[in-house]
Image 1 (cartoon, rainbow, N blue to C red):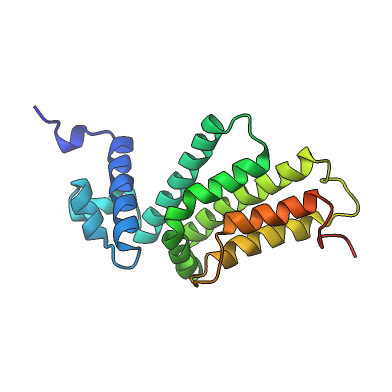
Image 2 (spheres, rainbow, N blue to C red):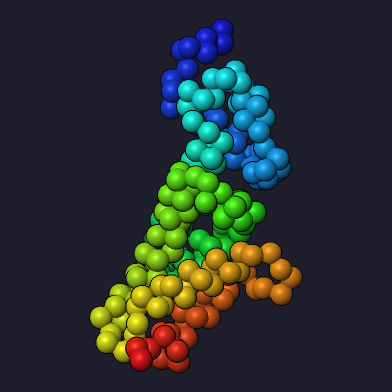
Length: 192
């Protein structure tokens, strides 16, 4: 006998909503997905979605956080012995399927604290891996390397590469080139 909806634990129902929202956001995009679509796909009464998430931005931010958390776990399991640069490149490559959602995040940044927080978490992950690369190669304390400029450059390359245009190479390829250049000592990321 199926369980009564009231018997379904909150975490399970939240998971159902996030799974439905992820699928819809990836298939239809943020703008074309409604809370009614999400509730129908998850089998939750339309108004009850708001018991779990205050707004579409909140569920969108939770979807993005969940996707990043899964990627971090996957990288931890599959790339446990890999160097930080390989993990960074692999993670960015793996998440290319969510590029349209990253673009939607930029559209929502001025309107939602939840989306800003999710975006900052994602950028923090990238910066953390850049810091790991520098530490692994002894560059984190190198007085000739401007670590803040390197972090900002990697983030700018990532953010700029996610602007749609036909000329851009994928961000992970450009970031690998940038980081390998720094590691080889051929970098413009030197202190002035």
